[in-house]
Length: 286
Image 1 (cartoon, rainbow, N blue to C red):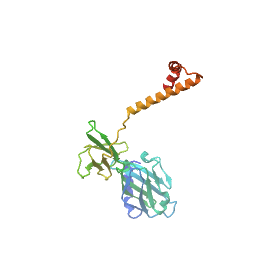
Image 2 (cartoon, helix red, strand yellow):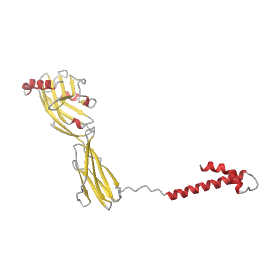
Image 3 (cartoon, helix red, strand yellow):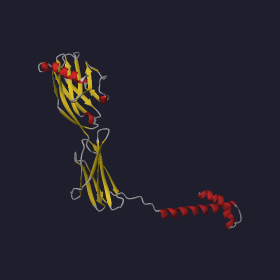
């Protein structure tokens, strides 16, 4: 529906709204979490006397420049052809509550882009009225990933905290004495409109602990030095060599014994026996 047409419709019906149909919002503001659900409600009076009476309900997302049709139902029939693609498959109306005058819309899988002003518009045989509701979708920095690395010279440690959320957050660092540690923090906006915030500090490898805190919502991570310093995977090459030589010798001895048994009575010379078993030994040790 054209945005100007909505404005004209509201102006046309406004004079009669205070006398006939009225719409009230259950609450004017909602705050919900990214990925979750929200149910926004408005109520109209008077209620329908007959379930067959004319009733049209429409929900819009509106801004100063445009409007998106979120959901529309005419006389119990959903009209999804004009629904904004961003809301397809994510909204439903609690139609069973319409008879009590409630117009409740559920939006699922909330996105940051769902934040804004919504308009609940009701049209009956008594007239038309609407109310506006504000929705704010937030994404807390709940999952904080921490990483610790040794610098190239091995004298310092590089500590990294990373998380995604919205709105954009700064990060503060403190040591065990609650002293502030200077940090380097960057943020990148993801396709899902989340801020990927990365913060780093360089510290000595001596005994200490450090805490990074995302200041928007207070989620944090703690580094314990040196307990959290990764232990390198050291390979004992000498032990591997000794073990390999031992295996080879055992294979050679076993092969010689097997060859001597195949020769029957008499003990052949070592040189002859080795010559005869050379090919077998080579195959076994390959």
